[in-house]
Image 1 (spheres, rainbow, N blue to C red):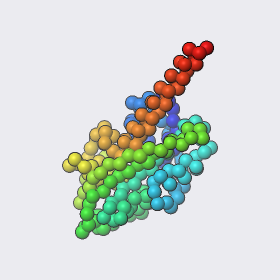
Image 2: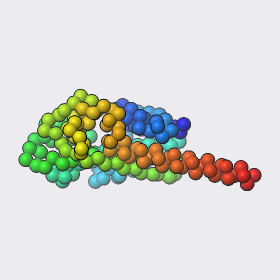
Image 3: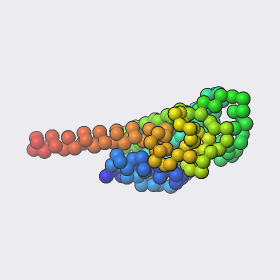
Image 4: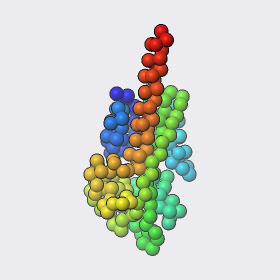
Length: 197
């Protein structure tokens, strides 16, 4: 099983990521560290800066950043989702949406550092914002977000249901497939070397 360091201060994110990647033969090792997040326009920029900030860690390192994007608010809160939630919670966001469209999407960008090489994976899930918080599960904006095709919020779904369709799951499954393919290539190269020898 491949071990990758996952850098975050969020216990729930670590649990989700570990559960999603385990079937791909990846064991996450949690490194609890606050990483300064730059003011940036995109999640990709934030994730690149996070990888720059953890260059001291050995081996494969994984970081990620996620945001809730609401087109009727010109993408807000987007890259500022975490900061906005910490400062204000749900009420101001629901007030802003009283007379606006409630379509929204969650996006995750995961960045994996493999030596000098970096690989990025993104995942998006479309949905709508509920009129009030619903459910007790999950974290962050989960009680407000109803994924497309469902009648329950992320916070009302079981962790298995959420991990089956979330933005984070979509990004990390891509990472898992990438690592599985890379491992197969390594094994094939080893077998070829043995044949040549």
